[in-house]
Each structure stands twice: as structure tokens, then as C-alpha cells.
Image 1: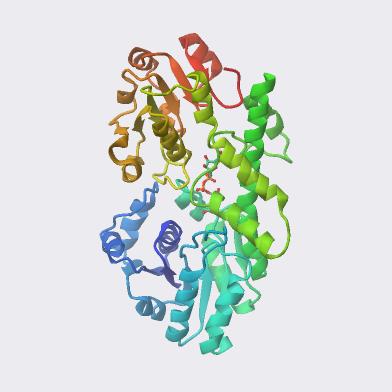
Image 2: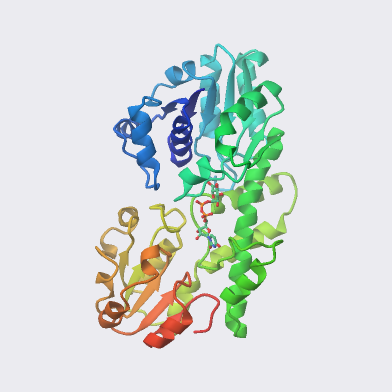
Length: 435
Ligand code: UGA
């Protein structure tokens, strides 16, 4: 099939590359000339495991083309995916300006039947808005607008795209349904479902999925806080409840709050949609409040331990990205923690396998960037674990003990067992477990 993907951000790039991988001819368009030049050379502007390998292969086979020419991409394609940003406005609403602008342009370019697919996370009613814009200039039989939300996780996006748990397609057009079904067949060969529904339900599904997961995390974070106060161990409680198939084992890990470009934005946007529809969605309010509170938890623990006096204390931070396997620091708990430590006049050194460049753009020379995880421990008063990268799980404990000024660890991700920490004689303060 012939496909255009408008927007080469994380969703657009993964979508375009994976469609090319299944034999389709894909034109990826972006207004950013530098990015397009980079992509033409097979270089990915984002860190996403496995993506560059597929990119190289499909560039070589000429199944994927990068261009800044929207008209060219549209002329050469039958299905046009919109993978454009929908940043949150001040009130939490998703800003649709990029999507609606492209829809205006498409209305002047399209001359034969095309399917326009909203891949971006867009509020309920967006497919109708795009349809209305196109219908101003085009006869109705020349297009269909489909809502096809993505459920990719950063760091495993390629795998998620190639082997999705489910594909959700919102359309009431039989013609579009048949084509979309054919397009997605290669990805559901193991028998995973493609769910067809109306556009509004598909749009809602995406927000509800993310908000529900965010709610689970906030719930577990509160459970962890209660466990600390009652002497229970949240890791055991988590296992105890997760084995109930109605609850499930996944996404129950407490920590220092959810971050990233999706959960915070999508919970806010769903909350806004509720408000705009005169519904007070109380639970979402609380999910956001709990998350804001949890992002402060490590700093509070640190402050308490040092009796509010952090001046001149030296902290080594391990992990900066909002989660492992990504260099994304959007809404990362590390940013708030670093700022709080600096405000308290502490000294901060940081290490992350891939996200240090991005953090440098925020903090410049205010913090020290270490070339490996151990360097920052030299003479540090404490180690603070913020992101659970695999390499932190089984470290060289001897070096840790040798380098640290005092054997103190604040762990926001429960990376170590209490037994191991006890054996090594660490003061070990984690989430939802005894100290
Ligand atoms: C999330 C969803 O999981 C994807 O399905 C969705 O497609 C994507 O948003 C999106 O809307 O684009 P992502 O933001 O990449 O994916 O990251 P997750 O792996 O879901 O983690 C989100 C946050 O929750 C991270 O800060 C992580 O540390 C936190 N988390 C996750 C926990 O605190 N506990 C858990 O048990 C799981």
C-alpha cells in the first residue's frame, strides 16, 4: 500500500518505519528540514532501540522516503497518517493547531480518494473537526477520516508497533474499514484483535487507556506511602494483589511518579474534556495531585534524613530519563529533584546512559555530568536512584562502598533487595518498604 506519514516525531517515525518494514511504500513528511536531512542518512533523531536498523533496511530497499514536500507525499499515497504534536494548552486542553493546519492544506491537495488517519492523541470530536475542514473544499466521496490511536511505549515502540496487543480503528466507513483491515493484517497474525468502532469511541479509548494506567500508578504510590507508615512491604502487597487475574501483575510498580510526554498530558486533557462537558471527573483530579506529590517524595526523604540542612551536601544521581531505555526527559521526576537539591544548595552529579545531553540543555554547568555510574559516587554523601536502568540492578557493590563518603542510598524505584542492602550495611530508603 502507499502511505504518507505527516510528522516524523516519535510516533510518526515508528509508524512510518514499521509500515515500510511490512512492504508498504511510505513517504514521511516533516517541516523540519534538518530532521529530514538526518533521516535521509538513516540517522534517527530519537533514541529508540531497534529503530535505526529498520530505518537503514527500508531506506536501502527504497520503501521509505523522507521529504519536506507535503504535496508530493500526498500525491503518492492512498492513506495519510497524521502524527503531529498535540501539546497541552494552559488549561490542559490538547492544542489541535498542527492537525487542523495540515487538514486545511490537505483540502487543497487531494484530488482522488484518500483515507486521512489521526494517529496523534486527539480529543473526542477531532475526526469530526478534520472531516468538516476537508468537506469545505472536497466532495465527501473523496475522503474518509479515521481515528487510529497508538499505544506505543517509548523504548519498546518498535516491538509494540509490530506486535500490538490490539489495534483500535475508529471509522464508520465500510470502504475505509476494508483498507485499514488489510493494512494492519500483518501485525495481528498471532491472533490479536483489530477492534472497529466509531471515531469518538476510538478517540476516547486512547485517553482512557493512559488515564487508567496513570490512575493505577497513583493508586500504588499511595499504597506505598501507607505501607511505609504501617510496616508493610509494598513489593509483597503488589505481588499479592497482582496474581488476581482481575487486577493483573503489570503496571503496579510504585515509584516517584509517572512522567513522559503522554500520561501527564493525557490525564490533563481528559480532565479538561470532562470539564468542557460539564462533568466533574473527581478521580482524575486526585490522580494528578497524587502524582505531583509523589514527584517530591525523594526530596522530602532526603531533607528529613539531613534535618533540612542540605547545604554543601553532595548527591550522586543515577538515572535521569523519565523511564529506562529512552533519552526522553519530558516531565521526568529527575528534573524536579535536581532543581530542589540545587535550591537547597546541595551539590549534584548525574549519570544516565543516554539522557545526559538533554539534561545538560536544562541545567548546563550547574550539575556535574559523569562518564560512568561510579565516578559521581566519589566523596558523595548519598546515592539517589531515580530511573531503574538495568545496569544499576547488579552494580559493583565494592566500588560503591569504597567511593561513597557514607553508605546512604535513596532509591525511588526499589532497585535493590532490603536483604542485600542490610548485608552491605547501607542506610537504604526506598519506596513503600521499611528503611
Ligand atoms: C505510555 C503508554 O504506556 C503507552 O501505551 C502509550 O502509547 C504512550 O504512553 C503514549 O500515549 O504515547 P510511555 O509514556 O512510553 O507509554 O511510558 P510507560 O512505560 O507507560 O511509563 C509511563 C510512566 O509511568 C513512567 O514514568 C514510568 O516510570 C511510570 N510507571 C510505569 C510507574 O511508575 N509504574 C509502573 O508500574 C509503570
